[in-house]
Length: 300
Image (cartoon, rainbow, N blue to C red; front, top):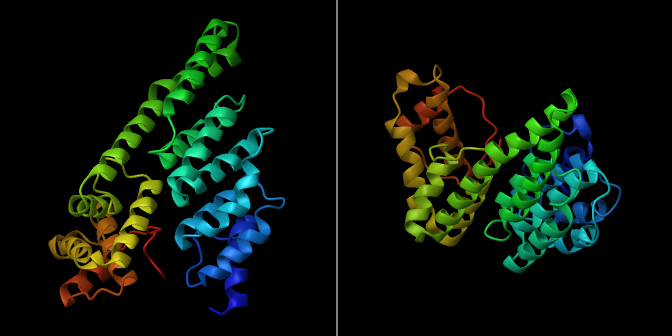
């Protein structure tokens, strides 16, 4: 893809709204991606644009964009949409920044975002951001603000139906969403602390959806780390683990059971992405898998 085509593809994806597509365009020169984002992100971008930009930065590893967007974290958000936008910015620093940059973003979140009056409405994204920032940050700061709000809402819950609904929503975040975020953070920290050979195996399992956490963030995160490992010369072991999936699956289940198709598709696409050779048996099994997935390590 030439420069003009690449720039147009990324611009449409990030700023094209519903017409931008659901998957980051592949095959664009990273410097073209970075230049576009440096020009456009400091301008009048909304939360959806920033979320799409985050997807692009993760795929193309655009850490050089961070200094350009850092001034956007200079003040507290005004309203729900701006809160979402700033949470996306924090995720950029958590995923692409240095530890010092992630610490600064986490401090900003604790200081300006966690106490926001809109934090309950944005709780899903805020908790995801705390997972992204880990090991930087501290989920307990938001947990403290949440407990205070739950206690205040509890006093008014018998007032009317709306008050009851507000309390139930906040209490469900406290009882369900917050523990899930704590679990994900603990899982991420434990994985990062493991020795590289063990961690690589776990990353493959995580990418394939075979670990205790299976959400889209962890699929992307594990895919990025596996890509880094391959670039550092650790590809053969990773390729061997991916190939095991294609060798061990029951061919009769492929094309019929999503549980069988998804890991086979992810493994096959990842091997294709890294230009790793497949045997005839592996190719045949890969071709039989039908369930659609939107995989990170996939160039088609």
